[in-house]
Image (spheres, rainbow, N blue to C red):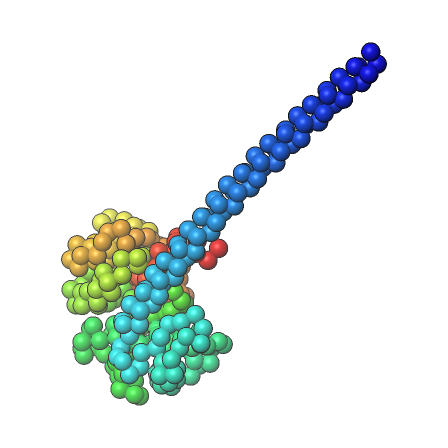
Length: 289
């Protein structure tokens, strides 16, 4: 009898051990499947992020090529790159040539190669845009290059190009209608924008601190700056066929002055419109994370 009981006990023990082993094996297999699934998902996401990053980098590069094309002429064009290693020797020579034409004090502020590239590109674009006005009203610098006095300024901080236009060029006093003589300038910008569908454009209106004449249809400084920014956007879209989804208009009112409002010269500088060209910044910033 004892022998039978012992044999039964052994069978139960073996059976129980077999069940435990099978259970552990099933758990291990399930865990392995979960790990493989997670790994597969992460690999797919990594591949997607890589493809998106490459696509966005290509967009920025294409945008930079459009800015490159906007510069004045082939002799002085400067490549826009992430660092000096991507610049050709010809482009470096062009950059040095352009910097020699500029104000030495401004050039002295360039601390890095990228700073120098930005200055040279901005100078070239400014000269190119100045040409849009024709010969009237332009002065020449010591090198025979046209300068629009207190009218047009370009700054570059890769990948953003910011163009500041004095409102005396764009609008008559007390008006929110864009002057026809500035249409060639706006058209040149429109052609650039249309050539790059991923480019975004922010038009900002600025005013001085002088209150708008009471009863004017311009309302107050906030509204006047807004109306003028919208007028530029409507011109880009309505006359020069820029896609509306690439454009945005905003008002800064009198709250972003670049000069003192106590003098007529300072107030004139504060009355301005800025047009900022950039690749799709939401996507661009996502790429930078």
